[in-house]
Image (cartoon, rainbow, N blue to C red; front, side, top):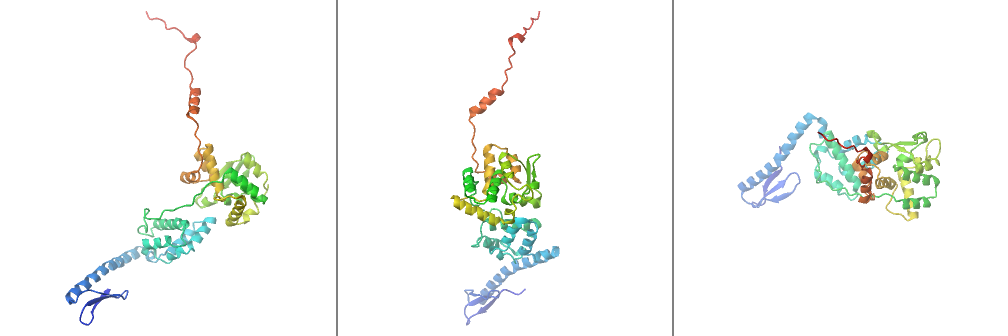
Amino acid sequence: MRERYRIYQRNGGIFYAKDRKTGMAFSLATSDRREAVRLITAKNQATEQPTLNVAMAKVYLSAQSPEFLTRTWGELIELVAQGYLGATAIRWRKFAKSAPLKILISQPLYQTEAVHFLAVLDHKKAGVSTNVWLRILHNRAMDLGWLLSPVLHKRVWPRVKYKGRRGITAEEHARVLASENLEDYRKFFRLLWETGGSQTDIVNLTTEDIDWPNERLFYSRRKLASRGGGRAALAIGDGMRAVLKELPTVGPLFPRLRLLGENMRAGHFCKVCQRAGLTGVSLHSYRYAWAERACSAGMPEREAQAHLGHGSRAVHRAYARNAEIVTLPLEHYEKIKAAKLLPFKLPEAQVHPIPAVS
């Protein structure tokens, strides 16, 4: 193995060392050859050991898995993309083509260090989604065994800071309907209010999803379709029935809107909100609103979770965290308790004296 540093002397005076890797030269601050040789030997030994360790590690790893030394983050990104469908797949592709991730695309996984991840997260175009998607990518690499150890431990990851989200209120919903000029959009917003579904799930409903004899509305969460979850069966109430009766009786419920992209529908809603003078809400706010209304009304959490198609309680509680909970006065429960207590005293006619024992 070629030594990294070589020694030379200038004009018979001070000895210098030159780095063959970088081409940089620096003084050894001595004119004694024996001392200079000891210094340069120590520096070469300090660089040889890590290099030797890496070389030995490559030999062992290549013997176990020849692909281990050549796998890049770009290959892993393509592998993960195969597991996503629909809108999630589109968002993943957008993340894969983003400017911050270009730092990692050609980087071999086994050579990745914390500085590489921090460079991605500190990129001027990196946002919340970059942090979230990079965590998913990192975890998938660990699950597959393509990383020997975490690049960043949990405590080192920058905290994900989401923007404040809330549900749309009944008054705001009424203002949206009043500002909407298109009838199909108005009915769409009304059905979102009644169901609490995501815009993609509701806009793709058809008449086959309605069971009128049993008054049920069925739909599947497209976001969870790849995991086989998110199936929801909703009992049709008065408000939902009124909207469904105004929609087509055959085929898609929203034939025109379903042909539009998510961004187009979201953009239209933003324009309606601007006309209505509303801020801080989006189409997804209808989903938050339903969760908050259910929580405030006292609906059992498990039932509300099934209605919204949430896969976990943590997700459902995040949606309902802004709900206004009103507690009844203690005397209300005391009256209920008093009403449930039954007297055990027998009527006097049924009381029989106990005969004396002689």
